Length: 282
Image (cartoon, rainbow, N blue to C red; front, side):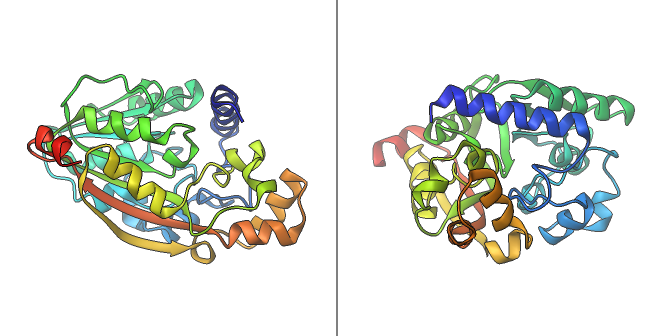
């Protein structure tokens, strides 16, 4: 699968989601997808109180964790959300950092950006902005954000090393990342790995946990820690394997093997206060 084709398919898929106002890729698919956005969001770490503070329509049920909460955001911080979608984590972050803070959401899908901006306008969020762009080429200057969060998005990038290099670049020295994402516990069956449908569903684009953590380290980050890990049984709903089988034309047995390889992790890491020292050590 070529990178440009992957990006096009992912963009088209999430444009459809934004337009139809439903969760993810339909019932039975990964990325925390579910017919009930609030119900699924509660199972992956959001509280009813949090969900009650954000605009209607900001939660599309696309996540696999709650990175904004895990990041322990502080008043006045500048936060960047990679793949911000309709804005759920941006709005939660905005509530946490307050009027003296600032939140930037970046997404490559025009329809998602439009929806997030509408949510911000209608609910008068003055400390949030949404920028159109790819997470491999962030539309931000160097050393400008305190915290980077992301929720089940980096697995969709065909160039994950570039994503973490860009994340490192825009973070201030001493800044931190908190990422919730899908990883693999073992290699996928070839029939799933080579499927663009499985890629869009957050399966085929995932890499092993070891590769994921090594990619973060190679970008220069320190203090890398997996703070939580949940197997597919706790992340995906029952019909997932059947849905993958239908989309990819594989057998149910192969699809079940793929689902059994999936885990959701939350990872934290820090850009050192002396980035040059980190580069020398790596």
